[in-house]
Length: 360
Image: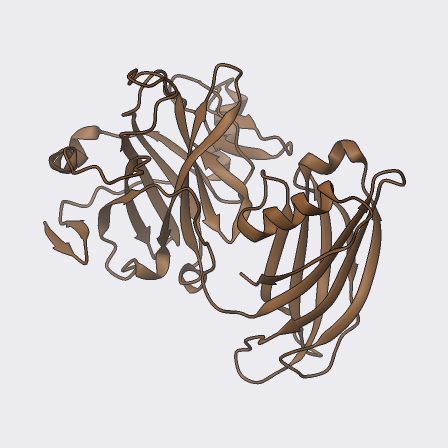
């Protein structure tokens, strides 16, 4: 083993992981096994643990939980258990990352967390944590760990697989969000940790053991792709959402400025409710769209709704490419400025709220 840039590189015997095929999974279901369950969207989702404890997740194509791991493989990280706790510390999480380029599968192993905050001062068992894994910039879908009871130092020892192409790996960020379930069964965010996959040596197939201190707020942008000016207005009496796509600036193209348009998509509980498109504007890195769209959105759906605005690069005779997107919505779907914009719209109904947002 050796340390590179603060990351522990473990040179150990490679332990291959076999990804079950869809046919194998189907046969298991036909035999009455409870190794799989249906996600909230009704599609096939991650396998459950050997204890058959079903854990909620939002379906990610090609992603699922592998289940428990052999903790002896990672005993080496126990040496880092005793560390100097900084001020305002909200916990530290250990995990391992391995990318298998041949099958384009990312293996993430959640190992443990330490020094999570307790709900009752002086009681180190007043915390019921669990973890969700995201591959940013997609924050609408995740994989989830088991729940741990009454501990501020949980050991998870679970592995998860994401299907991600080598080409797109550089633009993805692994986001780890730790939650606490209170006595009212509310899921309260403790903190987040980010691991940009561009920092991972994907060619080596090495398993890296990493730790990160949790942060209350994180920035998930993977590149400077430009900005989009968006206006929102909600009329609760008419149950009508008005989305203004005003202008973009400093768009980043692969080669030279191309024709662009914006695709506006309203979703409720991750299901597409309505999709609209602006007109295509000719080659410029700062297009002025100045279009608005009115969409029906019930008041009861505001907490489960999100708004996706995607700037598309248009070329005749070729498939349109994504330049970047913005996700606005409730706490389930957005963070930072995007969440603040949505909340301000809800709090100031019938007023237009306008903000710039960075593309991810």
